[in-house]
Image (tube, rainbow, N blue to C red; front, side, top):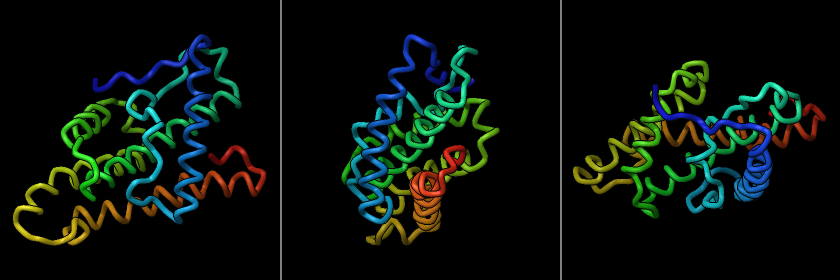
Length: 178
C-alpha cells in the first residue's frame, strides 16, 4: 500500500495554498541560481507531508484547486530533489529518513501512473544507497559514479520540467501546463 497521501478536503485546502506560496519562493530561488543547486531554499516546503497529496472531496475538483494541488505535488518532488542533493553534497545527514520516505512513496500504487516521478524516485533512491559505499571506496565526487551521474541529469530535467515549465506556462498564458 505504501505511504498514505495527504487527503485534501474543504477544511484543509488552505494548507495547500500556503504550501504553494513556499513553493513559489523555492522556485524563485532555484530560477535565480539557474538550476537546482546545493543549499537551495527548500526547507520551508513540508514536502514530506504534501508529496502526492490528493483531493478527496468532489466539490474541490475544479480547475483552480486541481492546479494548486498539481503545483504542490510538483513542488514537493522538487524540494525532495533539493534535499537529496544536499545529502549527496554532504550538507545534510538525513539520508536514512529520506530513503524511507522514497521507499514509502514507491510502495504507493498511485506512483505507477506517474512515470517521470517514479523514475525520479528510483534514481534518487539508487544514488542515496550507493553514496556511502562509493565514498568509502574512492575519494571522488558523487557525480563520478553512474547513479550520481543519472541523478545529476535528472536534476536538470526537474528544473526544466517543473520550475522553468511553470514560468514558461505563465509567460505563454497557458495556466493548464503546470
